[in-house]
Image 1: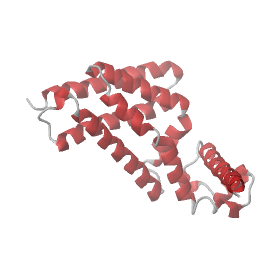
Image 2: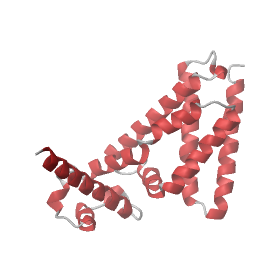
Image 3: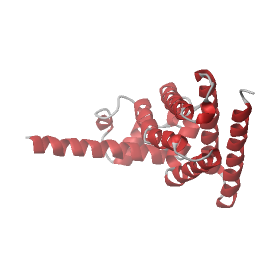
Length: 205
């Protein structure tokens, strides 16, 4: 019995992932608000009724895509900020992380960039929640730095938000850049983060 349940669960998970993959591919050329349920089920090769065994609505499918796109990054980003090294080394690691993630998951990043201000409120809220978590996690990591002595939680949260916004902007800019332009995008991102770091050193002065 347990073997049969395991096979069914694996099959269900495979179909669910097929929905996510199909939707992500379709969303390369359109927004989630214009995506039809029948488009997705046709791409997967199942009847429309099968969709509801996995997602209550296309909005919930979008929320699952948000989790898939951003959920795995929490530990990586917090670890990058809290890792040993001076400010320039941490900035360089953060920029390299962004470039690698955009290179490996361009469709996910494009989806987030488009839907962050898109027409599906549930998905906008899910993205906002993920970004708020990133900001809070970066704040916690920044608080461990010796240069954060004397900073209030509110100011550290503001600083973390600047870094997270810059990382998101850089990812979006990389998507729009040609291969020849990407190095310039990364150089600008590095300089902007260094500027934030300079402001940090003088904030309490």
